[in-house]
Image (cartoon, rainbow, N blue to C red; front, side):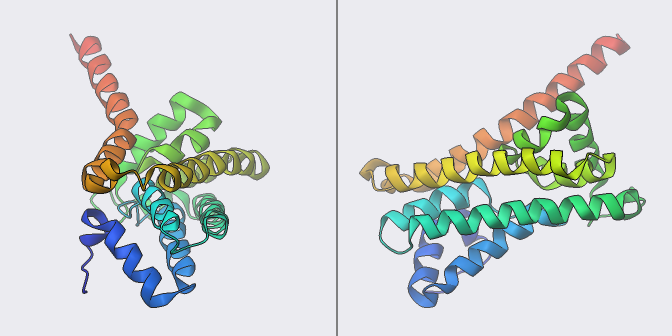
Length: 215
């Protein structure tokens, strides 16, 4: 069975089952790279994160992967990705985003994350684990802002343990429920929608406050 990039979002369960069957233990490396890139590279915020963790737990429940090895792999990927992103932000910072019209280094994503960071402070690194796009840019902004690395790492590790552990566990224990299996696409879209909700609420709140000031 052949898959295209869109299947990573629409038929993720089938993709992971196929990968597990075809590549065996190499699937852990493949999942490591996806999570590492989503969290560690500011040009990769579009990769699946929350849905991938949930569906990976589901596939593990089918006996295709070891849940302990899976969780450890994804935790390591997310922490290393965060740290890499932090270093890039600390060393390159604003230079990567000088061009406001760049389609690769999206200035609007950076500004949204800065606003999120300004509102929540250091705990943004933890909270961002559960917000797509912000999850990718938060370590970068933390590096730019000069947050001490050990403090950043503490927030990163805590957030990672809750994020990876929580979603993989949910997938593992609820993925074999018949209703969820039959409506997996809806469940994945629901997870994505819930993930984007905090960012959308924050954005709408800022817009409302700006209108009140201008009125």
